[in-house]
Length: 182
Image (cartoon, helix red, strand yellow):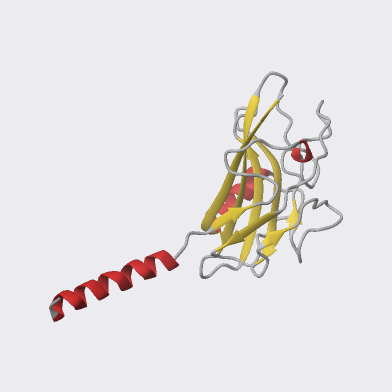
């Protein structure tokens, strides 16, 4: 191999290696699987459903540079409302937090100064899946890396308002989409 060809090959390998190391922001969970079906643990125990209403454990990795906080949400785009349904929204999660345990409630489990909003359920906290009988819906868990320490909102904020604010400050998003029917 000639010296110029060797230098070109070395430069190409260096570029490919750096691209491989720049992994994408990602979301994972031991409780749910992208493309999978929700277990009864993540099904509501209200609105005619009799699940356990337990939020899943979530972990995220490859956090983008400049992240100052996170927001986590659960959204059902198939809800028969004309605008979907926000099942869970938590924001102002500190930047050093990269995981949430299962079973977060309004009373416990939210890290630091994180706030859980009332979203569309009308009360703060997680509301599991509960589509109308005979229907299967999609449920999208999303973590958003934000460029601000804090969204100036409280627990009465709607999912739509929090969505607007997170979109204005989003650095990156990672999601897991699941389905559930009854």
